[in-house]
Image (cartoon, rainbow, N blue to C red; front, side):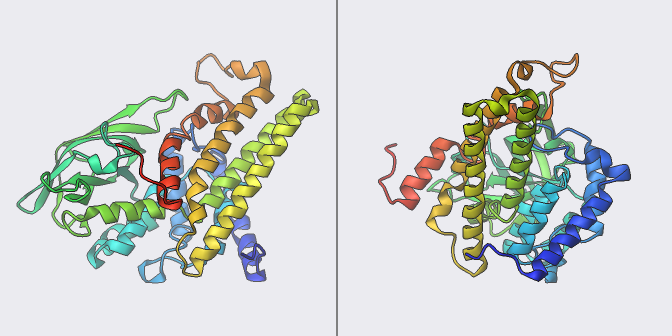
Length: 395
């Protein structure tokens, strides 16, 4: 791994930093730093407008092949974009599920017609996507999904329930993992990956209010919801590989942007510690230093992993620790934030019980970090079984 940047990379860094500084002003000044974890309901329409501005200026799909409208930037330059975006306080992206998950899946598994239909709306920021994976009885065990899709003439008819559907209430489309052959064994067979429009009578979205006071995700009920026969990615009953491909695309250069957001949070904690005198407490100082060190470990681990992938190698076995490491680290950062704030951590900024400041929202949201996208327990099973080759956990 070479962690140094070329002059071309640094020129690109100056380009995106300058663009962000220029455009996160005026009408978009209000979205700076908003819409992140625990704050997803903030300024939705303004952030949709920001998404379209990004698209109009070529800042969506920067890593996609040029043949489908992307810029085909190197992983290094993608990393620089996400870092500078976070550094500038770019708002939480309305289109990140479409750009980061659905689009790479369609590029890799989809037909030419599907690429022509679905990629332009993501590129210009006009179509927002959500993910229909988890169900009440199928969270970490995705192969147990019960939502069904049956062909009726030229349409798929979808019935079932999804849960933890991030951004469902403002999404235009959902990619839904469905069971299309209920008799197939083993259970990961008989699953298909189907694209379903959200704006139709058969789709009922019910937001789930979190302890942050926000409702970033929802229950989504499909009752005879319909979508065209051709809106299936991959082959019928062979959607498991497509679904796993989507999850693989989730771990990319954007992880460096996530880490820059973490750095912003750590910086805010340090400023509070300096202001209220907690920076003089040797135990608090030690915890801040530990948090800083952990963040640097995340960065170098991500750079090492991405460097190998860019050269065509499979992700190294050590990449299996990524999620459990950052989730546990971020959970502890939330605790540090509250300890640094002291008694002020117990007080809301306004009359509403959810008039929270950024660090309070961050603390509450980090309670979920070790659960969503694979709980710490599941992550330990993955590391032990798939990376270390230990016997499977008894069933």
